[in-house]
Length: 301
Ligand SMILES: [Mg+2]
Image 1: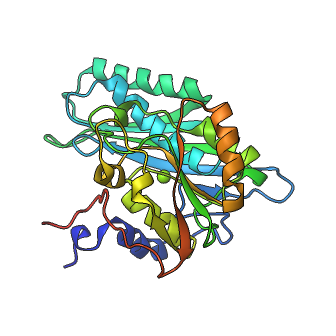
Image 2: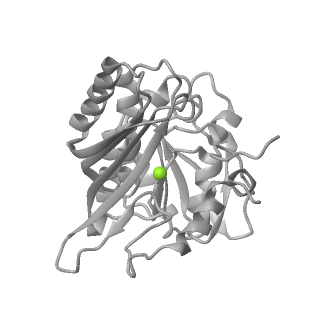
Image 3: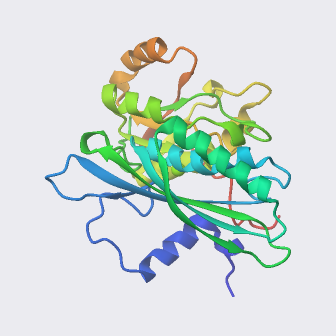
């Protein structure tokens, strides 16, 4: 028997996709931050679809205030819309909870979701509730629709060797607090796609060590990471900036000739948020290997 632990998350997804019928002409996905649906050339806007899940003791600790879990549940989805250059519109919430769960905690969960929906202009459209068997962990799933202007869509798969790698914000140390309170980079992504459209983009949910190889592989490239340039969060060192998950910053690529102008303009419009060149894409096989970071089905050590 092969177990999930034996193959890991990415290989599991690759094995499952062939089992099901798929959109014959998807604009993107599976395999990007969101699925992208093209309603036809007469429309300027593409539809984005996303689903996500939080499991207690995997994505948040028991005892975490419901309001923080609610913010995170919605913000994770919105971060994926940002990674495509888009914005959220409507969400569906599925709760699978133990019957002993305090009603007040669930109300707080919805207050946190509401905080995030209001901050980013999205609304609740519906949902589903279930109990889980005694002793099972609470599960909160958020699915969402969004949109992106056809000209602003950014995929993971369209970077080229030679393009510069940049990251927003500071990396590392998201546990115990930042992973519950982060701000999805929707406004920054919209600014980028309007003024300095990236050639590829991803949000850093599983850590630079996993998400950088994903972007590079999707684009058919290798990469060189300049570890000395990594923008480490206070109290963090380079290994944490590379391996810690849940930064929810944007990692993107752009033609190197546009970097200087981008950095100058960024400092004017986002003076409080660092933007850092951390390396470049290269031809496949020519760069660094890097495969650490968050794995949902980790091998036993
Ligand atoms: Mg993502």
